[in-house]
Amino acid sequence: MALTEAEEAFLKFDWTHEGWQKYFNELYPQPNHAQVLKFKKKWYRANIDSSLDANFDPLEAERARREASESKSQKTGDGPGLGSAEAFANVAPAAVSSLSRPMKRMSLLLHLVSVICGFCYLPFGTDLYFKALQAFCFGFVVELYGKYGRPRLQVAWWRPVLLDDAFCSLILTMMFLPARPLVFVLAMPTLSSVIFCGEAVKSDDGVLPGALGFLKQRLLDCVEPKRKQTILQLRSDIEVGVVFLLITMALLSQGNVVLPLIFLNFMRIRYLVNPFTQASFKKVDSRVTPLFEKIPGVGWVWTKFKGFLYSCVDKDKLTKTPKCSIL
Image 1 (cartoon, rainbow, N blue to C red):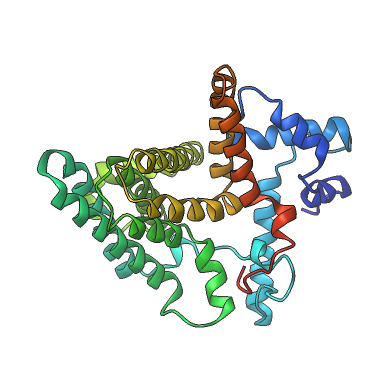
Image 2: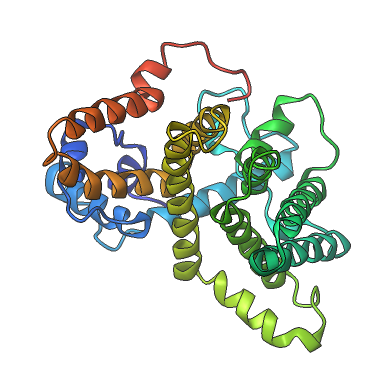
């Protein structure tokens, strides 16, 4: 179905608009990722174009447009327009369904072993903690290899890989292999593995034997749209929590000083491409700022720290700096 002019304009609208930013920052409590779209449409209809259909679903429209573009590319043999300025945003990671059944089963086995080792870490000691992290890494590597094949020194190969959740989870997990055990660290790849396992079972009903029907149903429940969004938001909340935990440990001389800097840089990239991470930082800001502003001195330090974090992801500053040819 063709989009109306109002719907096309909504999809192309620049959401760095000062009016929208002011409206969004004044919302309390801060909406989660699933609710932001509703507020966007409400504000847009009130301030930009009242003719926009209140029932318009931008996510469905974008999905239909991407599928049509992919279908056209397959027919013509052309790529996804990697030379354009918006190429990175228009390249979608490969779906779990693109894996062959043997690769799905191998990845599924590694992810399930990782999750089991993670749950057994507390009663059985740190050996299982590091074995769980190693198994997570192997699982993500197998998943990426099944989707994209062997690594190639080509921009067209790296763009979808960098956007893939498995690649982000692999880098995140590898960062903590040489660090001291932290139970919260295991939660991040565990939630990523649960999503992968659910998507794998959903795309191929025969990937798990019938005897594991109970497990199969639980995994399918995890990738229902609302529950999947909840899991992804929880993972982002934990990632943001780990940022402050690592900084606190470094200040108290209880951890590696370099690790928080590396992890902050990772979260900087995560913030730029992941709306769940943006929502998590907004949530922290809305809850912590009113508390710290009541404490003399602490409020000033918190404001400066927020300003530093924002300067790392400020789009105006980023556009003035040289960009990676892949990004």
